[in-house]
Image (cartoon, rainbow, N blue to C red; front, side, top):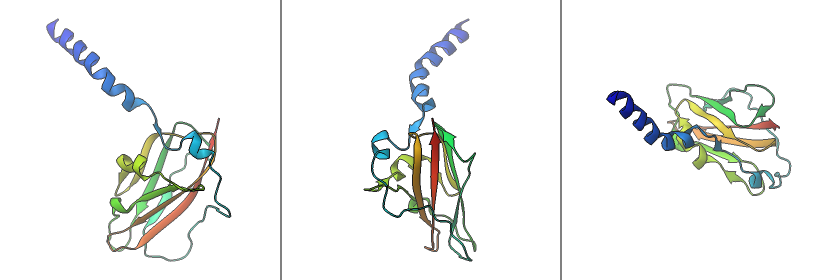
Amino acid sequence: MKTLLSGLLASIALAPMVGPALAGQVLITEDEAKLPPPKGAVAADRRGILRGPKIQVVAVGDTVHSPTRLQLKFESFGGTKIDPDSVKVTYLRTPNVDLTPRLKPYIQPGGIDMPDAELPQGEHLVRVDLKDSDGRPGTTSFVLKVSP
């Protein structure tokens, strides 16, 4: 009985620490989504043979609901490694919004995996830039379409 009671008390004591961790992390705020889009900005797909790192968006569908899992995979070539400190994520608005600090805990050499990204409804153009251990750049832009 004493073990059960101490386990229960430990669970209650830890509950405040676990609660916020289970909540989603705001990636883009409502106010940021209201900023005007940059003129002439479109998502670009990289083509051709390049030695720089590749960034792949792991999509679960054309549109997502918030909160959603934001997952990107990084691939390097020629024996190089991705430099996680070089990763920069930008929400393309006027002015641009640096999302890197919000994503920092989720950035690894193999990619980004944010399990519960909270985003407002709409289309959000995001650019990811990074470098490999040889300093070669990689970049991609993509649109996150969030439905109600």
